[in-house]
Image (cartoon, rainbow, N blue to C red):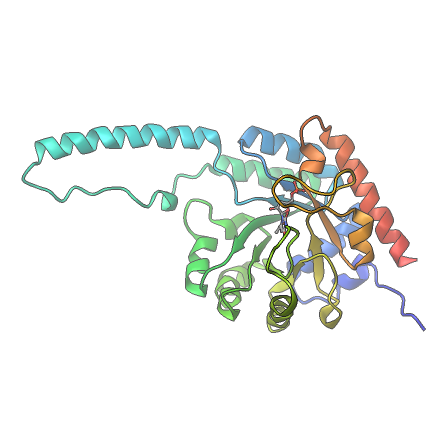
Length: 300
Ligand code: 6AU
C-alpha cells in the first residue's frame, strides 16, 4: 500500500522551525513553489524585478547581497579622499610614521539601508520569504559575525540563509546562536548543480546527518532530490530551466518536473526568468505554473 503524500500545508505542522512553517503555509496559500534567484548587480534592477515577480513566488533568493553601484561609486570617491589625506599626512607628519591604513573595507557600517527597507516593503506587499544565498563556509565564531555584523547585517532581514557543511557542526551552532532567537532558518548544501562538484556520496550523507542533529534550525537542503531519512525537511533545487540544459560555466539544468518527481519542494530559477530578452512576468508565470502542476501531479 502506498502512503498518500502530504501537501505543503500539511507538512508545515510537522516542522519545529517557524520560518519553515511559514514558508510551507505561504506556498500553499500562494500556490507557488517557485523561488527566483535575483543575481543582478544594481539596486534599481533588483527592486524592479522583485516587484514584477513578487506575486508569483514563494521565495526571493538574494545572492550575496550585491553592493549597489551608487555605494561603490561613493566608496571609490572616499578612497581618493583618503589617499589624498594620507599623502598630506605623510608629508606633514614625517616624524609621526604611524599613519593608519584602511584595509578592512568590508566591515564599514554605511551599507545602503534604503535597499533593505524597500525589499522589506516588497516582501509585505507580495508575501514572500527572503533567502540570502550567502553560502557560509567558515568556523562557527567567524560565521556568527558574518551573519550578524559588517555592512549587511544579514540576520536582520534574511529569513533563510545557507551554509556548506565542510567546517562541521560548529558552523550550524554558530549561525544558530544568532538565527534561532530571531526565528530564522538554515539550509545546508547537500548537493550542487554544477558540473564536477564535490558535494556527492559520503559528503552528502554526512551533511544529512548534520542536519538531523539540528532540526530546530536546519529547515532543509539545497539538493536535487529528497532524502528518505529526513523527508520532512524542505528541498530547494537550483539549476532549473524549461529551455536549455547548461550554461558556459558548468551550470547544469533540469526541468521543474524532473526535480519535483525526485522529491524537490521548491525550484530555484534565475536567468530563465530575467535573462536577456525575457519578460520577467511572463517567465515567472510560466515557471510557477510548471512547478505547481508537477507538484499537483505528484500528489495525485
Ligand atoms: O538559474 P540560474 O542558473 O541563473 O541561477 C541559479 C542560482 C544561482 C546560483 O548561485 C544558485 O542558483 N545555485 C545554488 C544555490 C545555493 O542557490 C546552488 C547550486 O548548487 N547551484 C546553483 O546554481 O543564484
